[in-house]
Amino acid sequence: MTAKTPLYDWHARAGGKLVDFAGWWLPVSYQAGQIAEHLATRKHGGLFDISHMGRFAVRGPQALPWLSALLTNDPRKLTPGKAQYTLISDPAGRPLDDAYLYQQKSGQYLLVVNAANRARDLQWLQEHLSGGVEFEDHSARLAMLAVQGPDSEQLLASLLAEPLPPPGRNHGGFNRLGGVEMYLSRTGYTGEPLSFELFPPWDRAEAVWEKLAQAGAPLGVMPVGLGARDTLRLEACLPLYGHEYQADRPVMAVPTARLGVDLNPERGEFMGRRALEAQARALASGEFDELPQRVFAVAALAKGMMREGSEVLAGGEPLGELTSATTIPAWRFEGGRPGGEHYVRPLGLALLDSGTLVGREVEIIYRKRTLPGRVVKAFTRPAGRYLEPIEFDGGEK
Image (cartoon, rainbow, N blue to C red; front, side, top):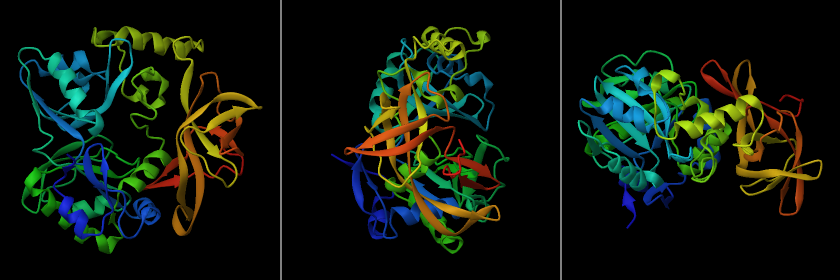
């Protein structure tokens, strides 16, 4: 049976086109449509219901060493009110999931995992549970909302009872919105320079969402569905589990993994460490036996279509294939901020031979048509409180 988030009724009343995603009813878009929702997030802000994701509470005298033994990042570097990107690796250095770990208070943690992997992650973590650790699934007790975009800070500051967390990614703290106490963190869901995630109680989530929607509308902030969520995350080169991360693919084949893997010798052993060290050595040496393929960003240099599974060639020879790809809208910037015109561009992430260099010209094959492209570093760059699209027809890499 497909589950409902606490905002299901609100989505239906607002005209959300509800679909089954990872076993949950979620809006793929609202009446404004996917393109408008994407552009609104980049210019003003977007509201996202992400209550379908898994949320595990961890506490107890042995919580820290237990987390350190099972996660690829080092939770000992966290202090109350800080968060970090991390992964759950198997012993062979393959990803069971990518996740976010929040230290909310001293000795109190919240681990957020992908919705499609929640049951498997829960089983894995419970199988490796040790004494002195209190581990609970709070996925049906806490909701999860994301407020992203240039005006998200202004919106939240007008509604919260306490000051916002300090500037900078991964800062957080407890706060109140409309009398509802919750944890709030500056963790980015769509790659925006200004971005927040909120964890209200399940039964108070709709009241919080309604206040955000009402106060956000005059600012141009709008609710956003799964369709624009995917294009926003792809534009920011954020990987998706099941696309870039896969259970049979080395963790370090995904560039973002380097932000979530800490191989400091002082850490000691943790699950998958030896395999991850071998992958890291391969990256450093340029001898890619452990990593024959890696994920790269690929931008089209002409109008056309590209989709997941499209073959990527270089000089007519196979180089790999796209793991995520679509046509993505973008604002044309004027004076350092989004202007009044937008355009579209085909972008994708691709699993290519590990020796591929940024700047390499490629051909993307979609339905027997060839689209010229280029391997690039990124599709966007921070521009103050905005995320500016990079245009590649001028030769930029």
